[in-house]
Length: 266
Length: 68
Image (tube, each protein chain N blue to C red):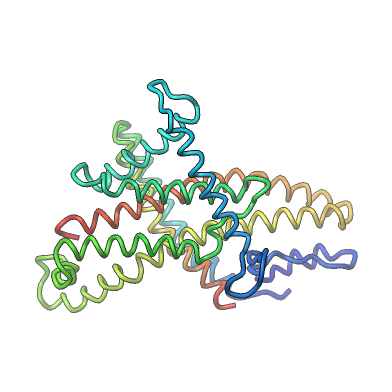
């Protein structure tokens, strides 16, 4: 992406403003190439350690009157268990999927929030590979339970809603096939990736642009740079909202897909 | 001024989802205003619809970066 409008504005006194690009998201720390240990990998491992420590520490000596930490864990768990799993999957067999959904929710939420927490400031999900890995888990799960419940042949037959006129079935079947096997996983992964990526790129643009304008610009650009920082501040708060929302949406859609595989009509 | 036409394409592709998301939340606000006790049920439906409509804009964003 080349936002050269801003670039030429900021280039008032030589030098030049480098707009943030997609390349800024690839940050290898050790080695290089496909096996490089990158910044998102380190952040991901950090988040896993942090989540494990927090969850164990707050539930090891669970009290009847919860402390602050236990309250946080319990409300997050209650939110996923009652607000997502039980409401969407139904009270009959939602408990099997609560561990999966809770893991997804907490992992995504913590990794998203790392995008704005100062020393880390890297949303792990802005590298496409990580949302794809999470989506694969959901994808395999809902296909597996769907095919295990009715068998592979019947699963494909059930893709078409019952009671349609026969001539329309050849039209509907490919559409449903694309929905179940391509669109659903694609959108699930891309939604999380796109939101985190775009949000972080926006913050990067406003902050580096503001910094450049304040340091290198004339008096007019200095004022614009202050505005740019104010915009970055507002967008950071907006980002926090989006980060919560994306963790919720990912878990909600995972639950919806699983629920769709558990009932007779899709 | 130089630039990339794919970004314009993304702008165009964001119109539809923008209108769609607006409609979804308008309906949600209407529903809650008429029946405040249905809020919990409506909320998850609204967010689900929002997520599905938003997917189109996200496609646009990703494709703007893919075809540059």
